[in-house]
Image (cartoon, rainbow, N blue to C red; front, side, top):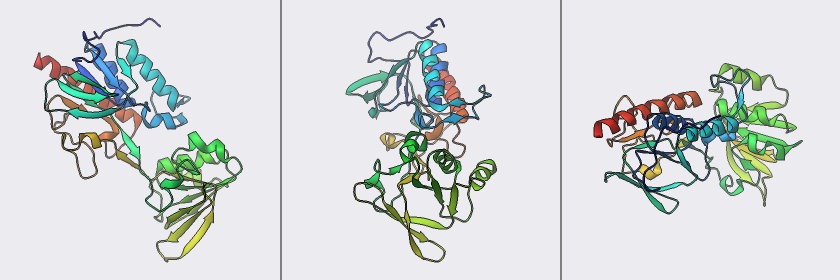
Length: 320
C-alpha cells in the first residue's frame, strides 16, 4: 500500500504541533486519521502500553466491516498503521503532566516537553480492582483482569470471575476453553450483561454462578489459594478453593493528570462543555471512554474520535 502523507511535520520534534492526541485506542487513532487527512501536523502520545482495552480482547464481533470478526490487537495495529500512513507521528510514551494555561499548550511525556495548538484526549479507562484484602497483593500471582492474556496459565485448573456485565461474561467464556471449572461471583441476583451473553454463560456446563455473593478476602502465600466469600443476603461466609481470580467489575476513566485543569464529574469523567467533544478549556477536546459514561463500545469511541478531530480542525482554522 502506498504511503499517503497529508500532514506536515513541525520544524522541531517537540513542536508546536497542530494537534497532539493523548491516548491510542479507537478514539485516538480515528482522530489521528481525520486530523492528518485535514493537513494538521499530528503527534500521538500513545502510552508505554498502547492500544487501549482492545489489546486485551480476543475476537471483536461487533465492529463494522469485519463479518467474521477481528482480533482486538489486530484491529488496533491496523488503525495505528492507517493513522501513520497519513502522516501521524507516534510515540510510545506516557504523558506525565499538562499545562493548559499556556498557548501553545505544553505536554510533558517521556522526559520531554511538547507544544501543541490543540489537544485531543483519548486516554480511555483503567481496570477497577476489588478492594478486598489480598487482591492487589496477588495481582500476577493468580489474580488477573484479562482472561485472553492469562487463561492459558490456568489449563485444567479452577478459576473464578467477579462481575455481572458483558466483560465478566466474556472473561468466563474465554476461561472455559482452558479451566476445568469457572465460577462467576456476582453481588446481585441478576446480571446486567446483554441477554445473548447471559445465555451463553448460563448454558455452559463448565460455569456455575454464585448470586448475592462478594469477595471478602483473597488468600494465598506467594500465589492465590482460596477466596473468602460472603453472601450479602444471609451474611454467611464460605471458602472457595481456586487457582485464579479474574476481576471484571468495571473501569475508571484515566483522567487523573487533568485534575484541576479540566472540569470532571465526581467519577472522574471529563465533562463536555459543547455538544461536539469540547472541554472546559477551549482548544482541548476529548473522546472515548474517558468521557463516555454509558456505551463503552469501540465503534462509539471511534465515532467520538472523528467528531473531536473535526472540531479540532475547525478550531485550528478559526484560530488561524
